[in-house]
Figure 1 (cartoon, rainbow, N blue to C red):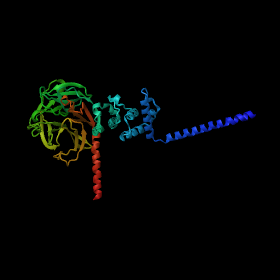
Figure 2: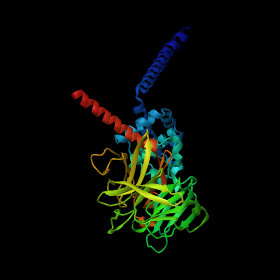
Figure 3: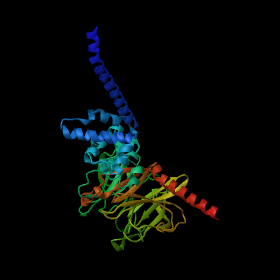
Figure 4: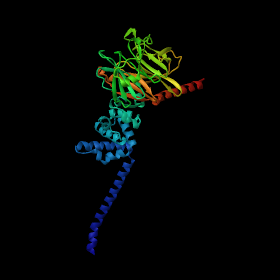
Length: 450
């Protein structure tokens, strides 16, 4: 018995130490766990990114995507994306943590730039510029945005918020330069001229998916700066030299490789001066709305002039043009359209000049008695676009826009657009609605002050 008691004298202190150690260890774990729980989501993400970065440096075979710290960030979902964006904005991500953060955002959003666009961007600042632009595009339309457009959307937010398609591929033009664009019931038609003047101008006939069906040669080598489909008379209207205007039978474009005009009008372009040679006239752009024809002049510095005609089909099937009126427009107009929105008419103008200057789309309320849309007093909405925007044309609630930067002649254009882009007119006119709201607020304030 004495021996047992003597043994216990030695054992009890040891057992006590073990118990005390375990209790302390339990308390320490509890404290650590409690501390981790008290960390904010941001702090956890920062800590995890740093730990993943360090492990990645120490072991070249280490795959951080399989690490529980990586997966923990993924599990935060949209909250993680928001936090990572803030970290990037505040420059709290270095190159290594930024690379990991970019992969995390793409995995959470299920949208990989490498897979979708062959864009491998590890720099978080550059990545978020592109990714934020993508977020403005409806998810179902993102697959229709091409790489050349995607990388420009951060610079052109108006384009980012209105575009829904840029995958209508321009045909191989060789030495030709694209100018005009119109939409028929079955086709997209592009006019182009030969810069050298050695061959006649052409029309490229595409189906609605953008596949080239045929090339039709015109009976002129002129600039053919525009084209408009007249669905009432089944004609294609195309301007030619010195202010002359030709109308072609659309059916011949389906059956022939070379076409000749059906009607020609020699004096309709009078006073529409060619900015490169003021002694000559030039119809630079045109459009048709119902039975009304609008033709206009271009000038790089001065205001342009638009003339409006009524298209009349006589009993003998001849076409005549009845002059109605004219009005001024801003400099550098390349395209014109009229559009009905909420029971009111609007004038849409595309403006550009030079391969290194941004283009613009201007929108005005169209009124029969407005003499000068180039006036600073006229209310307008302006959307900024990439350089070298040419003709615009509408189909239902879509605005198709053509850039001539695709031409080989302009290969040094930094912001080349190789596709026809399509904008959502409802989203375009959301800018107008916003302007109207601002005007209403201003008017309400004035009334209160009075």
